[in-house]
Amino acid sequence: AKEKEHINVAMIGHVDHGKSTLIGRLLYEAGEIPEHIIEKYRKEAQEKGKATFEFAWVMDRLKEERERGITIDVAHRKFKTQKYEITIVDCPGHRDFIKNMITGASQADAAILVVAADDGVQAQTKEHVFLSRTLGINQMIVAINKMDKVNYDQKRYEEVKEQVVKLLKMVGYKVDEIPFIPTSAYNGDNVLKKSDKTPWYNGPTIFEALDTLKPPEKPVDKPLRIPIQDVYSISGVGTVPVGRVETGVLKVGDKVIFEPPGVSGEVKSIEMHHEPIKEAYPGDNIGFNVRGVGKNDIRRGDVCGHPDNPPTVARDFTAQIIVLQHPTAITVGYTPVVHAHTAQVACKFVELLKKIDPRTGQVKEENPQFLKTGDAAVVKLEPTRPMVVEKVKEIPPLGRFAIRDMGMTVAAGMVLDVTPRK
Ligand code: GDP
Image 1 (cartoon, helix red, strand yellow):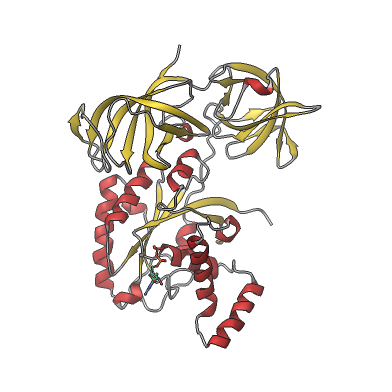
Image 2: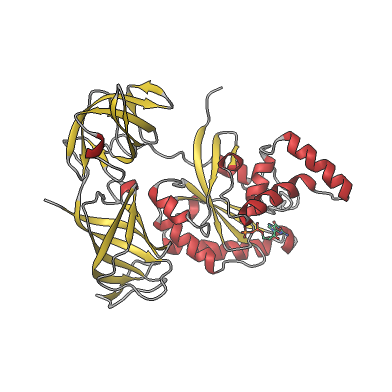
């Protein structure tokens, strides 16, 4: 059988609205829980006289791992729909979600927004929706969850749906393209199968809605960009940089340049999954041998491109940021570490240009003196050493960044404009 196309989905929403339960339910319905484990738990449950044992097991298992601070084994967060292989990527709130999203470690192609029918839209619902928009998640599915808690009442569903519609419109989502689904993650209503408890609902189930998502586009027509993750020196082969092709196409025989160092060479071979290949496309994780480049000429954080359209080394760049958490305030002169693609470079805030309303994009204040948690702003940043970034409009994966300080992500941002270094 042909391999199914892959889609990354983030689960977002206010705490306790049912994100983990829905993940467990999706995995369970998709049959992703190994039979021997279900069997083991079936026995345990019978001994204890429990009823809904299989599903409860999934939940306990997910919770256990969460409490031990482990990111749930990726293998346990994959399942198949009719059309796709879906990976549930981290949720916001998980320690490294924003950083992983921005650095491309787990770029989500879509989000499932979970809103509890009894609680409606809450603070984190708003936060996550705004963040999803900033991080470039353009596709969304809305689960109005815990319908069992409101007796599957259509009126309450419509009320909460209206709240969510308002919120999504405000940040610029096209609500006509977004499925809203009344669910009970706990009981499994409208997750895999249509529920007989919501006869008034004619739309898709969660599984059906997942199959209407569009697969991520492969940006083959954009200039080549491969952020370097590692550089190896292999005897008999030579220098082998390793990284994921973000945009463009790399072919054996190509002349390439690495920025910021500005060294060039020729691609002698490309390897993926230990197999030689002739061409590499966006999404491919590759190692490639480059003649003319020494192991010590390049390093993690450099970016490979073609000489006729080389990666942009920034003298400074203008960016739109949101301050997610900062204990005091951000002022001119602040120099935290910017994580963009595989690069980590301390960058100095040289100008605070304007504070903006995150929802409307309207200017709230010109040249503010400081920025604090919750603020969105346009700022100018200056890398303390040479660094590649690109305009988010032109090359999105190289135009997003996280700002880290004191062991946390203090802000997320996207590059609006770059002043290239001469
Ligand atoms: P998260 O913080 O968003 O991951 O929320 P959880 O999945 O941990 O769920 C929070 C609580 O709500 C747990 O006690 C769940 O059992 C409960 N819960 C989740 N989904 C449903 C649902 O559809 N119906 C009901 N009645 N309870 C639910």
